[in-house]
Amino acid sequence: MSRYPYLLFDADNTLFDFTAAERIAFRRTCEKNSLPWSEENYTTYKEINAALWADFDRGLYEKSFVVVERFRRLLAHLGIEGDADACMQVQEDTLGECSMLIDGAETLCRKLSETHKLYLVTNAVAAVQKRRLAASAIKQYLSGAFISEDAGAAKPSTAYFDYVFSRIDGITRENCLVIGDSLTSDIKGANNYGLPCVWYNPAGKPQPEGYHADYIIRDLDELYAIIDD
Image (cartoon, rainbow, N blue to C red; front, side, top):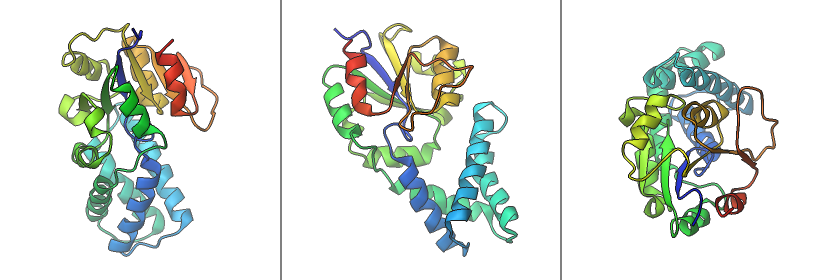
């Protein structure tokens, strides 16, 4: 029997190809709101977005603020008078339509679901994530999905994992494994709650101080050896 029968997967850029989805969504947002599309502007948006979500992980902002504020800051940077709320709406609507997966994710979930319980643990916007999940090829392999808005708390807080653990029969701190790409939400969340974790790190970045990943992988296929160990 596997030492980790319960697997808690992050969604974006762990199972779902959020990088591809975000690019599609931003381009459509520019088209619908008459914003100039360019690689430079897209890079600026990603930098603004990443900084705001990092502040969200630290508990500095609410999610509802982040999803609009990123466009307020982008518009200010570009010197454009625009409607940040309208930009947000196009971005979120488009993301909800994009359910493409990381290479190997569907096969991984299908095989692991035969012997393990798979769950999503995600901080993504609830309306977006529910639409993406419903249209995805992995929905049938998941035993549940825990979205921070529904939980009333977000990774990396212990309150979020209290919510998750209260809804999974048989799970313990020893028999589950958190798998995710984000140090600040997934790995930090697992560390805060005393859970073993896998850092999905396809770029091979060095692990900074202040975070502890029990395992580090660059390809999803590496999970098999860890889970079957």
